[in-house]
Image 1: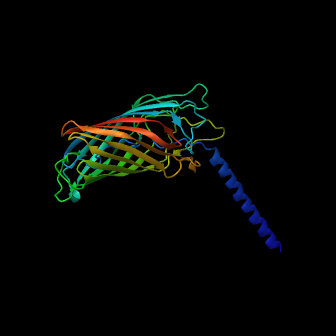
Image 2: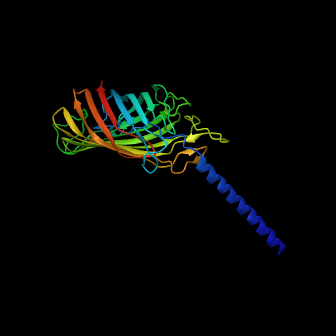
Image 3: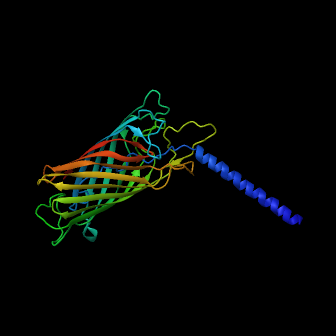
Length: 346
């Protein structure tokens, strides 16, 4: 009998220890702030019309992105404007230069190559004098370099052999037209980063970003394009302006995994001019982590929609313009965005 009593007391002690540990862990999780967020440099809306028609001939293509993003609202996880930020204003002015080299190597009939994207980012923030919290911004500087190998498929033309064509130059062909491209990108944390600022040009951490882009033309004047991304963000010890909490030592943080996509459709009004609509959406698959502990319900989601269009100045020069307006946003800053993309093919 005494043997079973001792066993019972031992089980009670062990069970009580587990309950206490669970209580402490739950309290620590609730107290930990969300200090590492998904990077603002992800491709949300940068993709534009005819995206699947990458270069298939050997050579160099240079793309220059000019973007203006104005955020006048910071929402909580329910999509409601957060009471912690009064009259927020966050303006970003990224200028991104992308170099895409198409090689002579043609595996499976497509073209292998390499891409490097170098961003230069300007930032400005402002809040009302009575705002409980503020997000100071760093000075303008270079963002994270994003680079990786790419593979462009051959162009598929119904009823005829595929041939290398300039994006958009399909006016002499009829029937469905299809092209796709895949790329494995790496985000390198070389961008400007000030630990005393909340908003920085650089993210401060590594990330891997595979994607698939495709364009389908059900007939010669109509195109539909998409680019689908998955992003895994690695842990980092670079923390942006973490709040001072007594007895809490910050070790690291990790932004959650993301899936996001860009979608466009356009109609070719004339031989050179096309007009249409563009949108993008993002969903955070896993919550952010602080000191290895999940930050409860810290997930970001956005959906934007707007008009757009493009103009072919020549066979080597194209300009795309895209306007994005918020439809829904959760746990992130949000507001309208305007982008201009200039493409030159050497």
